[in-house]
Amino acid sequence: MLNKSANLINKLFAKDIPQASNRDGYGVGVVEAARKNKRVVVMCADLTESTRNLDFKKHFPERFIQVGVQEQFLAAGAAGLALAGKIPFVASYAMFCPGRAWEQVRTNICLNNVKVNIIGSHAGVSVGPDGATHQAIEDIAIMRVIPNITIIAPCDSVEAKKVTLAAVNYPGPCYIRLAREKSPVFTTLKTPFKIGKAEIFRHGNDVALVACGILVYNALLAAEELAKKKINARVINCHTIKPLDEKIILAAAKDCGAIVTIEEHQIAGGLGGAVAELLAKHLPTLQEFVGIKDKFGESGNSKELIEHFGLDAKSIAQAAIKAVKRK
Amino acid sequence: MPHIHEAKVKKLELIANRLRQHVIRMVAKAGSGHQGGALGMADIFAVLYFHELRHQPKNPNWEDRDRLILSNGHICPVRYAAMAEAGYFSVKELMTLRQFGSRLQGHPEREKLPGTETTSGPLGSGLAQACGIAYAAKMDRKKFRTYALTSDGEHEAGLHWEAVMFAGKNRLDNLICIVDRNNIQIDGKTEDIMPLEPLRAKYESFNWHAVECAGNDIVDVVRALEEAKAIFQKPTVIIAHNIPGRGVSFMENNYLWHSQAFVPGQAEQAIKELKAIETKLLQEVC
Image (cartoon, rainbow over all chains, first blue to last red; front, side, top):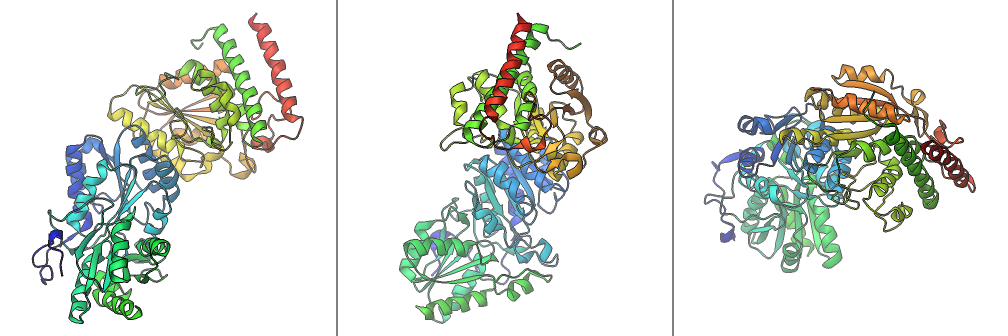
């Protein structure tokens, strides 16, 4: 049963559900953030349009900094801006920042503990035709092991905008993981959002589907399929991977006795890993992992790849059935 | 001639000598650390902290202070020594270097020790951060300057040149990069490991103004800084030709002293030599 207080859109499973990309939500959000806070600046590494920073550049040319194809500088330079009181949003593809700039993110931003918001766009395999080189499916893992940083993967463009605005005043560095492709816009302005606080989108006590990013919608679709088989799945939008909302996940483990984690990321070290670490310590619970199984991505369209890598609603439902059977 | 009195020069030479003695004692006590570069840069640190920088040791977060970014964080013993002598903290605390619980970490950490400006050590990233600070200063029309101290070895890192390119593009004339051109790095001589020359021409081709100076000559360092500050529309690099291990006969120009531990007697010998120089300097003052 859908959680009414989540205020999701009415025709949640309509074929013509509105579509937009998470990066679009960021692009709108960062302009609003800049209007509200003069310290907000944007740094881009030659990907201004595709990281959706053109509007920002147009509205705030004096606060827009172009660094060219220099992702290490992007991270280290942003640390400098933050040290001097700015609140930089640095935007690239997740593969390049944090991917290429890991050590600068770790030392210059996170060890320094400065207020830099890293926008990692084009994360996951849904990037599509660009292929494995550009499909970041390791980024959550490499960010999770760094102290001080907060990691957020919004579920749709509406939430991406909320994340962007919330990150401005959230203490410490943030990594915001965005998808390139359009995906269903299913949350609304009334859907609760707070960094670090996961939300129950659907009630159920047979199995809990804990998802992040654009796959939250697939989890909802899977839950509908499962309902037809008399399996009531709880769906949790776990947008903040670090710090994890331990309370909501432990409650789900206790109530459901089976967990499926769902992410557009390697199974190793991602959301599933974070959940497993938590459960192993406090409440060992059987868990299935929906994610990339130690493979690189490849070219294809978004839908093909989501299916190929077993991240579609059908695969999620299968994982849930398997989890329930293991109980 | 640079604007500095002879008496001030002598004072700075004495301070530099004192910083060197601190470095030897600190590293000897810690049992590890990097002495070569620290000794070589002592004169520049004396000039910066006691002549050049606008700063308030008791108010390290003063908004309008000049920013001193130490990119080659491993030579931090000399920075700590200069900070202590300038009054940021007690000279006594210097002896806690590299010990558990100390604010004086093996490589500087901003959150632990106010006044260090940034956490540093991994080479090649200091100038990039200095660029960010200098750029923000321009945006806010702040008058402070940003000084980035770099090693020559770290000029082998790609990130450093990304920053050089950025500073050139943005005409950051409020940014001064000082290169500790001592020709050594951990594995040997820079020109054997990965040649940097022509270093000056490299900077000039990236639209920087370049000055060279004798980094162990106080007057020449002051001259170079004055020239740098007179340049508009370009960042300036000061290539400071330094003698690593300066002041200690058996350490000078020997790359092994980049970070070699003292064996018994060596630190005492080093202090003895530095004391002799101090005595001579004091006689000259009188």
